[in-house]
Amino acid sequence: MNIILSLLIIGFIFYTTKLSFIKCSTNQKVFLLVLLIGHYTSMCFAYQDTIDFPGCDAFNFYKNAVEADSWVELIGLGSTFMTFLIYPLVKAGVNLFVLTLLFATISYQAFLLLFGEMRKSKTNNLHFYGIPISQFFFLLPSLHYWSGFLGKDVLVFFILTYLLFEFKNKASIHFLHIFALLLFLLLRLHIFMAVFVAVIIYFFTQKDVAKELKIKMSILALGILSISISIIASFEKINNLTLGTILEKWKEINWFALHSGSGIDLSELSYIGRVGLLLFRPLFYDAKTDNQYFISIENCVVLLMVSLISFGLFAKRKQIKMANEVKMAFLIAICNLLLISVYIYNLGLASRMRLMIMPFLFYALHQIYCNNVDKNKIHIIFPFFKK
Image 1 (cartoon, helix red, strand yellow):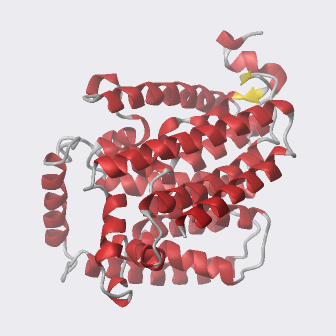
Image 2 (image 1 turned 180 degrees about the vertical axis):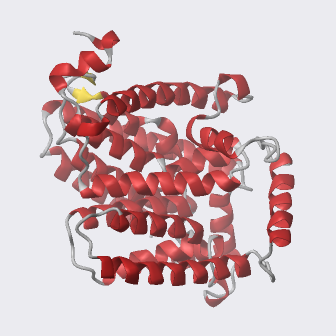
């Protein structure tokens, strides 16, 4: 069973990679091969860490599925639902490595979707080997490491990417869309709420949307958000949603943070500080382990390049135009960032949760930069990048 499934997955990997490969220029073919090798190398590290740290989420999903007496008892939200999804495969004899390979392949398909659109953009400046510098964000090891685990975030990342490009292609709503949204809601309800807010903001800022439709969407949004808040309160065992119960839950999260491996004191770090933590930390000054020092190098590069690109876009802000799906990707990234920053409590979790923020932020910045900046005047924006 495991050998057959592994061969099928590997065949699918090479088939989908070949479909992208034949559409690429020579330079982009090299990039795609590096992406492929980097992704599955990172998956190997993720699998090894799953084995070495049996208390991690990925191992617990597998363990709970093995120990469960029935499929019905696993119906629930979040981690419980994740175990529910893999239960049939585990009971059929699929081992942890093959499950990890399967989930890494699911996230790889999301990267292929993003790559397929980004490879079409070109620039004569801020490029390396003919590839825009902003595209190299998608080779960051941490993104591929966290997308190489057996976990909820891998599925959410794929679902978001899939729906984003279905939106771009103006596909009619069908069963797969509804099924994907249902999975998304059951896996990460609070992220679902953030994305829902992003969709509402998108339509409210579109000039071609009728006023009557905006009013109907407002009523629908309030209804869905009210139901979602009630479900979250029930899930967190909050009987009365008051300021006191919210503060009590906040204290519980802070206590957990202070007793976790790389936790932070939420009472001493401002909201803006947590936004910065989620985007760019750890940096060298707060790295404590070898892995954190490695990630801090990555974060310094990201901080520098995002700052440069953002500065360039700000200088051209009056001329910027965004395609619909780019605007949606940007709003998804920002809404997820603002929500997750509310409760983020340690550096490890911050690194993992970026999977639902950074790919969409990088995609939006790449598309906006390549499609808006006057390539012949780039040196006016970045005088230190003169030819």
